[in-house]
Length: 90
Ligand SMILES: [Zn+2]
Image 1 (cartoon, rainbow, N blue to C red):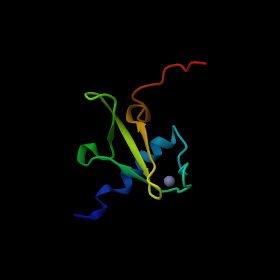
Image 2: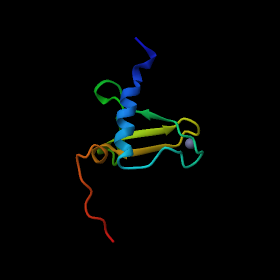
Image 3: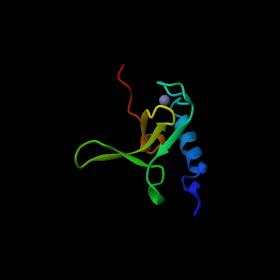
């Protein structure tokens, strides 16, 4: 089995989806441009969870800066277009 099991394809698919919603090419803390995607394997590949309460969580894409380790998360359902944002308060 290859060490490339994390696969660039999944990384590119996820980063392309995030780029439609957010600019993130440069880490805000160290200016590095390279990120890891943290997450599960198999059916959960590239997906992690944001814990809301002891019994509730939200699926998310988690990115980690390869230089300083800064971690950022994007709610999967929003990035994947499965839910739409409500009207913003102004
Ligand atoms: Zn960084």
